[in-house]
Image (cartoon, rainbow, N blue to C red; front, side, top):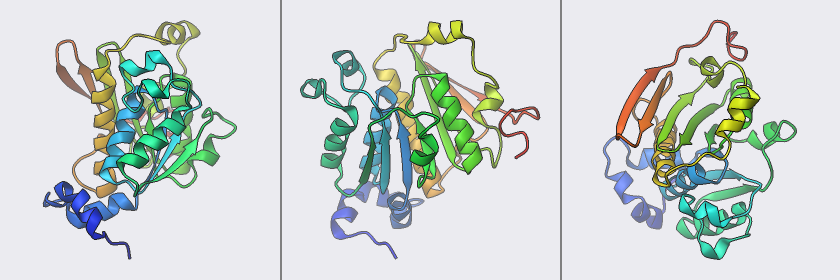
Length: 251
C-alpha cells in the first residue's frame, strides 16, 4: 500500500489541510497517470500545476524546440532554453520542482502511427494542442480506449475548457462532428493570444484533472466553460451526446 513519507507530507500540507482532500486524496494523485499532449502555453500551466500537486506519472508529448516567440506565454521555459528541445527543458524544470514525479518524455509528433502506443498506460489525456487534427485524434482514441479527455483551447483573449468521457456522455465530436474546412483551419493557425489566457485555461484543465483523480467535486462532463478575457466574463454551455455522433453514438 502506498503512503506519504514525511517530506511528502510537508510538501503537500496545504492539500492535506483540505477536509475533502486529506492524505487519501494525495495518495490518489500519487497513483495518477496523466498524458499531456503539447508542452506550449496550455501545457506549461498544466504540467507545472500537476507536477507541483504530486501527480505520480506525467507523460509529455512535444516535437518542438523552444523559440523566442514562445516565451511570452510558455512559462516552463526561459531565455537559456532557446533551441533546446521542449521535452528536455520541461523535464529539467519539473524535476527540479518535484523530484517525486515520474516524468516520461515523448519528443515526437502525436500522430496516427504512434498515438495509441503513447497513450497506453495513462488514464487521462490533457489537451495542450493548437489544432483540430490532433484534438480529433485524442478524442477518437480516448473514446475507443475508455480514457478521459480534458480539452482546452485558446484564441486571443478567449478560451474554452471541458471534459469528455464517451462512457458517460458526450465526446468532442458531439460538439464538432467533422473536421473544419481547410479555410477555417488556415484562419486559426498561428493566431495571436494574450500570454495570461493559456495560464488561466491550462490551470482550469489542471484543476479538472485533480478533481477527477481525487474524486472531489463535479467535473465538466457535458459542460463547457467559455472565457471572454477581454470582458472578464465566464459562460457555461451544455454539451449533449449526439445520436449520430461518428465516434460515440454506439457507446
